[in-house]
Length: 251
Image (cartoon, rainbow, N blue to C red; front, side, top):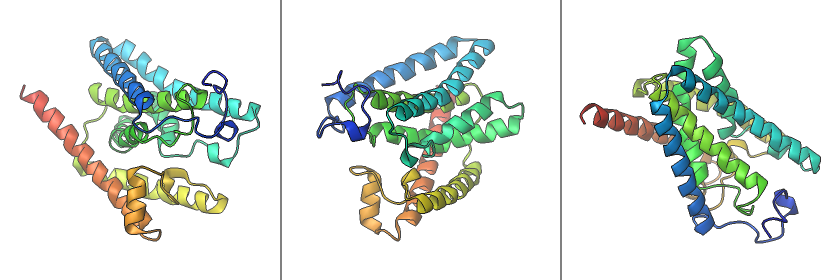
């Protein structure tokens, strides 16, 4: 079944062909991703400056290439539509990461690196834990693409911190808030005009904490509650980085 359905987009899949949230396939995939991340981080720590720059550039280039590959595949089977545009919160990586690696402005690099670490990284981790692509078989192109995509998005900001490009400070939380507010407003208008659901601003993914938020606060208070949740996640991220830094200093 998996082989026959490898290239199928979700509308071409038979019912019940996907994987279960935290089922065996999902858990094994998460373990493999964790092993991959740890391996790259260990190797990164042992490399010199030039090789580190190469690793950064590879990730920054691979992400948009992967997205282009996906779009080409969707176009080839006549399944490309407004719902497949690279406009989700996680998709912001293809615009932000290349700027980080190729800019000569240290302030821009530091700001975008911190936004990546505090906002995009938790979003990518949440996507891996609560994927909205469970309708696909685990050995499907779009499923594998999504797991690789979000894994690289997790990896990049961690490497930015290790490389000293940013030192997350809670005093900079306003930068993340502006990013979320301005970006969210633009995406919300786009969603409204074209009946899309980017950044999951119109409705949540079923079976995820966003659905609990939506059910708890209702349709009209969902957006404010979502922003509050995002701010809390940012604060937790800052706290975690602070505790990690403190533990490393006092080993």
